[in-house]
Structure formats: structure tokens, C-alpha cells
Amino acid sequence: MILMPINTITVELTNKCDLDCKFCVPEREESSLKFSTFKHIVKESQKVDPPIKNFEFGYFGSPLMYKRFEDVLKLLQKNKLSANVVTNGFNLKWNLGFIGDKLMKNISVSVYLESLDEAKCDQLTGVKKYYKKTIEAMEYMNDRRIPYNIFMRITSLNYQEIEQMLDIMKFYYGQGLFPIEMFPYTDESLLLTDEMKKEAIQKIVELQNYGESIHRVIQFSEVEGNCSYQRMERLFVNSSGNVGFCHFLTPLEKTGLFNAGKMKISKIIELNNKVRKKYLTKKPKELKIWKRPRQTVSPCSYCLHNFGLKKNW
Image (cartoon, rainbow, N blue to C red; front, side):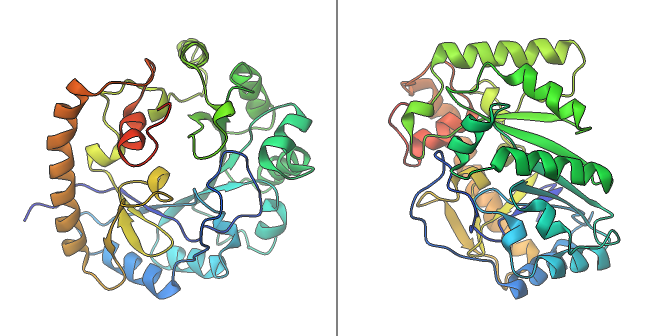
């Protein structure tokens, strides 16, 4: 059996969060990954050749709210593994304050920040002082020499602020800006129109051409482009322990494949390969006949349109 070349396992440790963002999934049932399941995943990840050395935590929920987050870091350190933590900056300084520098040695952070307008930023995240606390978190990470990036969720309210966000990232010594498109889980008024998205893409490409540390992520790519699921680089495990299509689809139904709790890595990859092969055979054919709701669609648009978010997508 040929195993696909996985280099990263993305794990949603918990879907609990301390924010109330307008663009997030409402009324989802809270869940957290069993630590025994995580230990099993780490153990199995070292049995492939080459071993999987990178983990990523976050997305729907803040991994810093996981009760055994420190134990997660200890397990990573024991196995000489690295990780990127995707989280918000609201309580980051408080949560990481209990974690020693030794455990943070091979850890980087991606923190969300949507706007330089304090009122707008607080409004989008549903929490007062979010902007101020996130700026404090960025200063704190710089003081502790913790490398970090900024994730900027692009909406109809902030799509013209990309260059300013790049400037604030550089001012606080961040390593890169990742503009990502807001998905239409709830408030459709925040969706980008075609013209807004074209303007955002134009600005991202312009800044990249100047050599700036800004990344044109998958939501700002052409629909025919390959996502990491198609490139066979990642496994995605949600907070219920299910291997799924990708982290952006975890809140949607029918995207979980199977539970990885006690399964051997070879079996996980074998089953995942079968699902990917079926999907990759189907997608190119469907793209040819797919009536696109928007002209500026992306590889993510196709999945979201076909897994439950057809309207305006």
C-alpha cells in the first residue's frame, strides 16, 4: 500500500471559544478531543516513513481553552514535534503566561485580528476590548520571542484595510499576514461581493510583488486550484476525534469520515486515500457543469457550495 505524503496533522482540540464572532457557526454543540485520542494520534503519526513532525491546532474554537493544553505541549516536546497554534488574542497573554519557555520552544502562533478600527474589531468579535487585548498579546509574544502570524478574516467591512493590517503586523514584529475569506455561516451582510473580492485579490498580489510578507491563501485562489486536501498533505481531526475533509468544513454535516481514536495510521491513511480518490475524480467533472453563484469563487467555494452552503456561494 502506498501512503500519501502527509506533513501536517490539523487537530481541533476543542470547539469552545471565548468570543462571539458574527461570522462563526451559531449554537454548535461543544466538544473537546479526548487526550487519550490525541496521544494515540501522536504515537501513530511517528509510525509512517517519514514520521509526521508538524501539528496545527485551532480553527472552530480556541486551543488555549483546552483543559490539557499544557499536556499537549509536553507530549509534543517529548516526541520532538513542532506545532502552530491558531487562536484569538483575547485571553492569550493570560493563558500562555502559565506555559514555560521550554514548552514553547518549537511552537508558533497565528492570531486573529480583523481591523485597526477598535470599535469595528470589537463589534465583529462580539467582545469589548478585543482589539486592545490582541495588541497586548502581540507585544507579549514579541517579548517572549514567540513567532506569530496574523490571520485577517476579510469581510465587506474591512476588505480595504489589508495594507494597513500589513503595516501593523510589521510594526509589532509579526512574521506574516494571512488574509482569509469569511465563510457565510451566519451574517451574509459580511460576505464579499465579486468587486470587493477582486479589489482584495489585487491588493494582495500587489503587495506580494513588492516582496511583502503577505500570503494569497486558498480562498483567494482560482477555483481549479488544489487545496491541501487534494495535494494530500494533511489529515484533519475535529474535536470529536473524526477525520474529516478539512478544518473549514468541521461545523457542517456529512463531512466527518471516521473516528481515529484507536485506528492505526496506515488504516487512517488508507481510508482517507479512498475518499480523496473518489472526491478528486468527481470534482473536475462537476466543475465543468457547476453554475457558479459568484465569479470570484475559489477551491473552498466548490466544497462549501456542495456541503450545505449553496446560497450566494
